[in-house]
Image 1 (tube, rainbow, N blue to C red):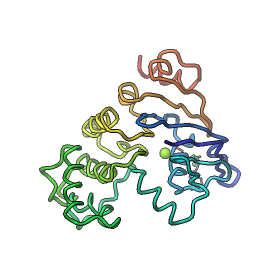
Image 2 (cartoon, rainbow, N blue to C red):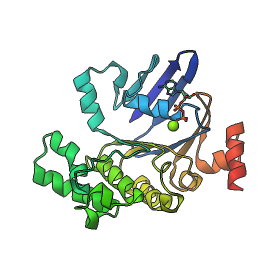
Image 3 (cartoon, rainbow, N blue to C red):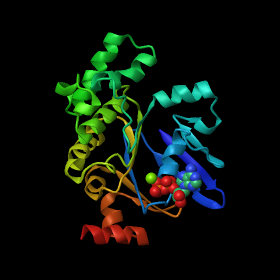
Amino acid sequence: MLSIHHITKRFGTLVAVDDLSLEVREGETVVMMGPSGCGKSTTVRAVNRLVEPDAGSILFQGSDILKMTEPQLWQARKKIGFVFQHFNLIQRLTAAENVMLGLVMDGMPRETAYDKALDALDKVGLRELSERKPSELSGGQQQRVGIARAIAAEPPLMLWDEPTASLDPMIVREVLVVMEELARYHKSAMLVVTHELPFALHAADRIILMDQGRIVETGPPDQVFISPQSDVGGKYKELIE
Ligand code: ADP
Ligand code: MG
């Protein structure tokens, strides 16, 4: 589904991502963890070309994202759902309108798009609140609308960059529950950046640990957190114990 080969990204003299390679297979949930500043966001953003790597290739369904023309990139982005830390909902639109916007812009008839939006809102437990504006929703509910927006087009790949990081600790759980359900029952492949250890333990097929722009360890959660081979893994193990 996604195959990143030897990407490097420098900001001036800083090497944010250093010759990094990884794969996410169809339907797989891969959780990427590591200390702040180790290059997780830069890696995930490169997949959507919000960041341009200096070297390497990023194959999505077999085509190199880094070589795509602007129209090709538009087509590819439709198949990649992205959930950020900040949900950026449009305040004057209802939850349903926020979710259907991308579908309508892609040419889907409004009625079909509305039905799809309701389905997506149902999956995140918000069907009853579909006609509310973002200001009438809690932070957790707004982020769930953001998730519904990302899954509405049923993308084969989903990228998540710390989707719970800006949420009140009390409502982090409601978003994690939705994410876990998607990881378990949704067909999408998921690359998830998060610091949420319980989510990583329960939902990940594979963990990738990063440090200083490189992958320092990868494996299933029980291996990485129970018998870590890296310093970063050792720190997570201590947190679990
Ligand atoms: P993480 O998501 O793991 O916290 P990032 O990928 O955001 O890390 O950042 C990796 C490194 O690159 C950090 O040192 C960060 O300060 C730097 N960095 C990220 N984006 C930029 C940018 N646009 N300009 C300059 N430095 C950046
Ligand atoms: Mg980040």
